[in-house]
Image (cartoon, rainbow, N blue to C red; front, top):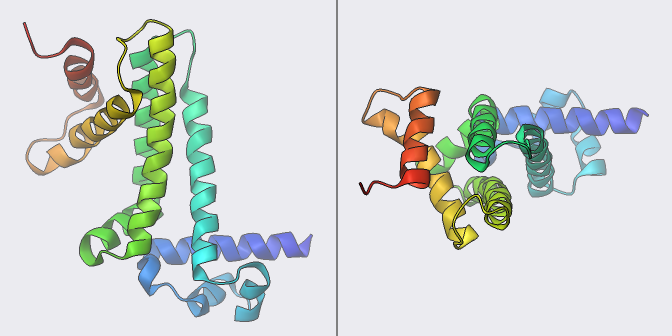
Length: 191
């Protein structure tokens, strides 16, 4: 029992360290100090910092998948589900300090591991969206299209409306985001 607790203690400490200092500045010494264990204890569970980081990302991805599955209601229309899932995932992302630090580190220093970590997480969201687009096509809710392309456009549009636009414009509320998302993707701009 104590072995599992120690491993979890190390993972929690590493998550805290990566969230506070980023990937590049996190050391095994820091993790050991935060976890209140000897550095050797960390190496009984993880060979190196990369393996520790990968394990944390894997846990985050699992948590994101659980959130997405929880939001899907098969009796509801595609776009309703899409809004609920994207809202929940973006809320999770904005509250998760690790995302914030990795995004900052990726922008400021271009640390490859930070970029790769963010890409892993983005790919999970895109794979999920792709499956939902395929499902909506099969159900006849949306036109036949390339699910991969549509998924990328949906994801990028959502990020633009919820994050990027805030640099140029007053932040949109959830209803405005939903309205623009529906306008661009469900209705189109043509009269």
